[in-house]
Length: 94
Image (cartoon, rainbow, N blue to C red; front, side):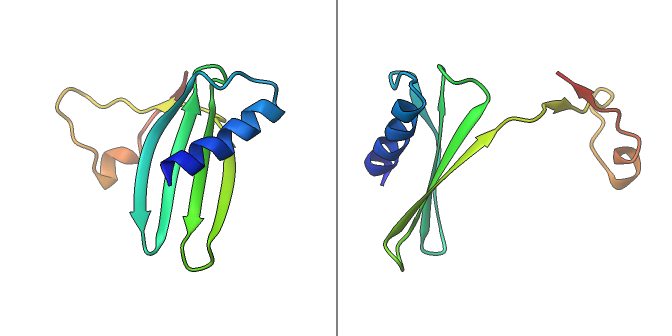
């Protein structure tokens, strides 16, 4: 699956006129008859591709995600998130 996923994303990169050398695999999972591969590229920052293979239908789906934001939530030293202190989170976009 990973080989086919990589080739599908390489095609997308070529259509975007981007190099394919910086492509890397982020994760590979198998859930309920579907295989998912997630890829990123150092040449296209902030973009992830998810390739899903549905084995029941023998179909591949390619989704491209663009990072909208990156929010950091900080807690006091050794403080664990709870329902009470999560309501007081102050997010800071990076």
